Length: 217
Length: 217
Image 1 (cartoon, rainbow over the protein chains, first blue to last red):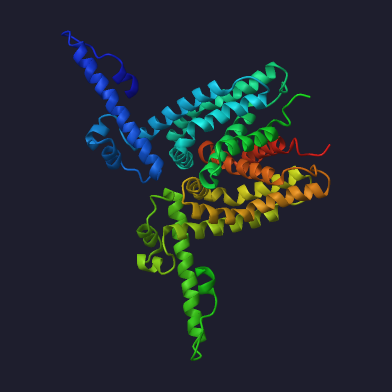
Image 2 (cartoon, chains in turn purple, green):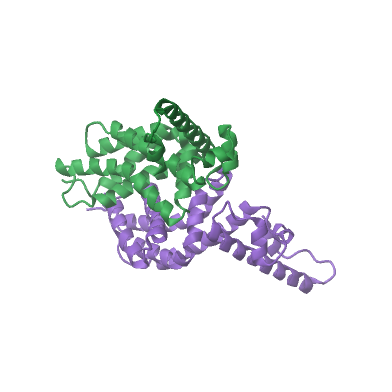
């Protein structure tokens, strides 16, 4: 993988490691600058209208410098997606807290909204792209999103452990429905100007519906 | 509205109405040809990469002839969306049949899948666009989709009438969740090759989850 290749030390033959490390550090900085510019442009225009030329311009470098780091726009988009989903998964994990399954899901996902509302157009671009991309890209995107959905299914499985959720509950189905509900609310934030509080309140109603049949009585 | 304007008779001063009617008929045919070409191109490429030039080419006419019928690509897309949602609403109404609320929802929505699976890429393009469009376009798209969602909420309200669904059920919320579940399955059809049977079976599980807390006991 390109990522690991440029982060692992290159073989040195003549003790010039510090120089190579400086070069490596510069390369990481360049890569990060490209990613930031790409993130801004995808958020502003969506995937299709964003061009490598304009991403390079946004990063203050040549298109050649962009291509030295990323094969094409699709790879650039996936790198942004990976960063964002990894960060969202961490946020959800940190936000889960204690309480009932519904409370834990709501506080984890509310933390997710909190951490991503300032990136709303980027999330819109990500979901839009997810509906119209090559199968290989979709497959990789699912693997990346699985980091986030696994936080949801872990909370649900914990609920089975504590007998709050029925033993035979379909965790895969419930996870998918919670994730879809979570994502669908970004639309309301985007077009209806929903605040964090409104989002979290609506999500709580959706969670109540989704969990109604799964909660052990 | 452009639609009604070109369908209503133009004022005639000299008894040439038949000629004008032929011209009107030709205009309707031209419009329809443009719509078909647009539909094909949106399905093939998605919204952004589709150009008026290529739509005109697909319809075998000049870009001028396209612009004589549609102001821009956004209006063309909305005309396709309106046709499709109107037709989907009719299909759902026709498919609802008899039985429990879950059975009626499932047969209505399975009819929807049946009538639209051959247009799968167009549906993908429509959902993708719905995530990244100007607010005014979103507002119009919602008005058009309301034709479809109202079929869902009518079935749910019928269930309140027959005491199958609780009197205080949140029909707006349930409708939204059924519609989101319905749409989300198009992804599985697109990327996982789900058949009509698989879609309908999965939808049935989703409906069961959504209705679990709303069914009166």
